[in-house]
Length: 389
Image (cartoon, one colour):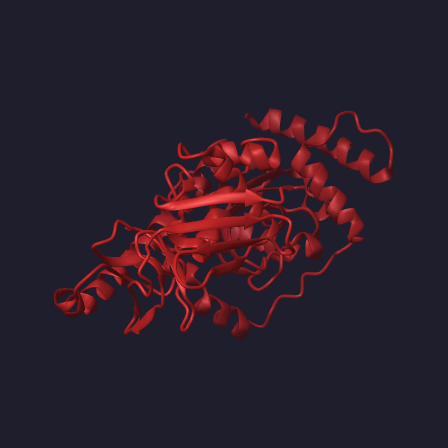
């Protein structure tokens, strides 16, 4: 979009912003994501004309958060991609943690000085509750990528800015690691920015996965003497349930995250009691039957999944969202269901696929190979029935 067109759009958004906040009818409705955010922010009592919460954390605490964050493993890749663009001299690359705290800023010194005046600094918290509608905070609240332009921001002080943000998840367990954001003066917005941010997140998540594969390779080498001498089916997995090695069983990617003295259910092995190894776990059958039957009870509070495959059942409590997802996957039958189809079933549209994938990744930490992927379906060798729905 040309600068002239951006300026016209910015003026239109200011009129919409002012009308909504004054309680009068706007000339056009704000975008749905913006309207939802403004509603949340108004309920929090954020002052559009004030300087809302921005007190940054002490530098020592910011540095500690950086060291503890898995994003420290990929921050260089994120910067390299986003700062290599031709117009990188006009924006900032910002990475925040899962609490909305700004951990890293890179980019234009001129824009950095402008951001300093806004309180957009290292250690500052940029959630909706702290500073109103902004791409970092709204991406956290919506659990989806967000781009905001000019007066789509709630605070008047942020109106001269655009910001494009996307959540970044740990591919190991689906947990939210933080937000990658590009921000700059509104009239410098380039149409390629959104695609660049998306590409940087995908690159970072792929790099995190490579780190994980290296750790699985190390665990596999550690377990080699055991695999050579063992008889019967078994798995060697890491602390998250990802399979480093398998023998005599078809499970190839993931089981439930093992815990000491707690049985877990594995298709092809039945109920197993994990045994601790250096850097991981040994999983092998503890019962004579390998057939698993499961019942998802939606009427219990919380919803539960009970699995039988030996002398005693294995149970896991599910969050309402995970129970809803599992019921939808079961209803799809052996052919399975895609992330887009699940997004439509749960949210009414296909725009929440990132959220669906992250939720299922977290759910597989508890269910492991009971839930298969590509497409999402109930694992082979598992008979699941749903009651109470």
